[in-house]
Image 1 (cartoon, rainbow, N blue to C red):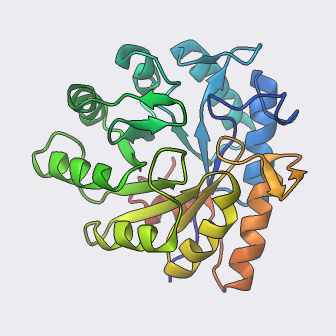
Image 2: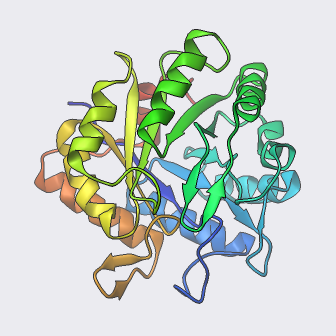
Amino acid sequence: MEKLIITAAICGAEVTKEQNPAVPYTVEEIVREAKSAYDAGAAIVHVHVREDDGTPTQSKARFKECIDAIYKVCPDVILIPSTGGAVGMTAEERLQPTELFPEMATLDCGTCNFGDDVFENTMPMMRDFGKRMLENHIKPEYECFEMGHLDTILTMAKKGLVPGEPMQFNFVLGVPGCTPATVPNLCWLVNAIPAGSTWTATGIGRHAFTLAAPAIAMGGNVRVGFEDNLYLERGVLAKSNGELVAKVVRIAKELGREIANPAEARKILSLPAKG
């Protein structure tokens, strides 16, 4: 079984300091949380950025500032900027970080309910996102919130509308209004991806670790972080993203999986070695 790649989604666009004071907004706070996750064992940091007051933004300049600052303290980490942004942003807003030519970026695979909101990813939008990633030689992480999202993106890949194999999927399960975070649902998704693909499981809220454990045992990878879950255990707020990553490392150790460093993760994901 390959080593486990851990992704830390350090702040997202929705969570706030009112919910957990450790949620990062400023560049310095984002760097602090990225470093805490990296030091604990995360090979990948999934990056959203905020204004200093916590307002989510897709500003190219803000992304560059944060990415450059993270690389100063974690020079070999894999960064995956978000093109999801926040609910209600336009496609043009959301695509801004792709102008920085990151090695990877997220590509959301369809419209879905997102709590009380609707997260819009129309087919024209997805074709635009796929075209940009093909042009800029960016490897997508395909974000599937619903089971139907997987068939949609596989069909697009067969038509050459998005980058194809080897593909990396992130199965985000447990978002209110989307596919529930159950082991049967995860197994269905994993069994439907092309041979040679890689995949990550993300359990939202209380499902963060109950989905992580079967994903580790199945040979997949795991994402945790403040974007998805603010608690280390029931009623106990995590003090950092590093604490959440460290818990995954402990689970993996009990299940016999070694942790991939960034160089090993790049090889597993078919990314070029960092020069």
